Image (cartoon, rainbow over all chains, first blue to last red; front, side, top):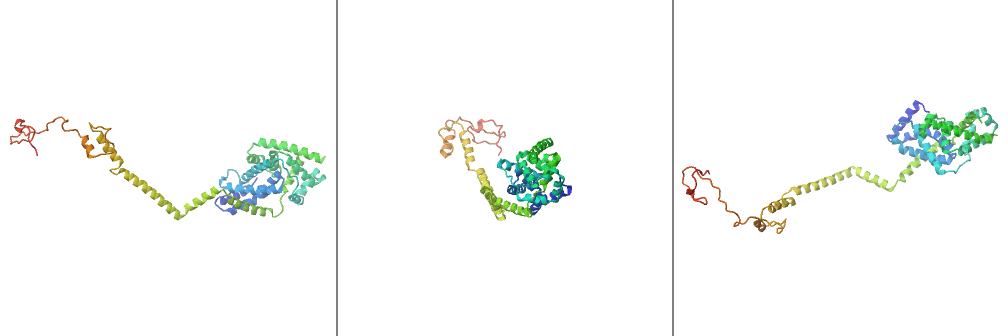
Amino acid sequence: MQDEESRKQDDELIARTQAGDASAFDDLIVKYSPRLYGLVYNMTSNHEDTHDMLQDIWSKAFRSITSFRGKSSFYTWIHSIGVNMTINFLKKRSRRTHMSLDAVDSGVHQDKEFIELAASSTPVREANLNELQKRLNEAMQRLSEDHRTVVTLFDIQGLPHAEISKILGISEGTVRSRLFYAHRQLQNFLSEFLS
Amino acid sequence: MTDEQLHALLRLKRFEQPPAGYFDRLLQDVHRRQRSELLRRPLWRIALDRFQAHFSEPQSMRLSYAGALAALAIVGLGAAGFLLPGNSSSVRYETYLVTSAPSVERAATPVNLLTLENQAAALPKLEEAPFRAPQTRTASTGQPRYVIDARPASYEATTVSFSF
């Protein structure tokens, strides 16, 4: 979730963009692209597809920015665009999957928080971390688009149930239900590897 | 694997980020995409934009105003010509007066051709018209009278006087 200060900053940037200041929209791109990258990458598991999708998402957002009325936060709005476009892309891509990890994964182990989390988690410590991440990506790809989306938004992006229900246009009960089912599936896939 | 362990593993993916400098390149690519989208606009849209841009210029605005004034003048002249005498509506009115007169054979007379012959034929003939004595007013005074009517004035009553 974003704080009040961040939202005010977004409102100002949006107003400037709607008034014709394209550089204000660049600031929005710089601010939200890292989170959007995480969202799209974890749904597609492919860096090139993610790169193309991000361009499409920002182009569409720029074309639609004049119709943005502030009923929701820009954060929710841009995530809605990103999720819907990515789901459409995945349906077109159909069953074609990319299981190989990209170069972006190599930087994960150098992160301090990652090392702390890995050390505190017994299965992760015992297994090869690289291999486990690879298996996790494979397991994510075996989920349906709907289940993968809620796992990405809740577990990876850290959004609350209420925000996810707004972004996806479904009830919070449906969000919880999909999360429960997706977690069971992931546990089954990874248990095979860990055992 | 417990829920907590799975959650912790999934949280690790939060730190998956592209190489350094990627987002600067993304910004440039978004700009490039926007420019290419502008160039890939459909032809009808480009033509519409050019048409609107042409008529939004000041000189073109004057021309468009002149055209509108010319159209208004034509409409005004047409309306004025419609109301002038001798036009088609006046002819129709006169034709109505002639054809509504008695003893006129309408089928033999063209509707829009009004000539002296037609007008003469439209008038009642003298021998067919019943004789009507002219109305006279006789003087009530005792001044001398002359024959001014069909009858001698001496035969009339003396209550009528001339009043010129």
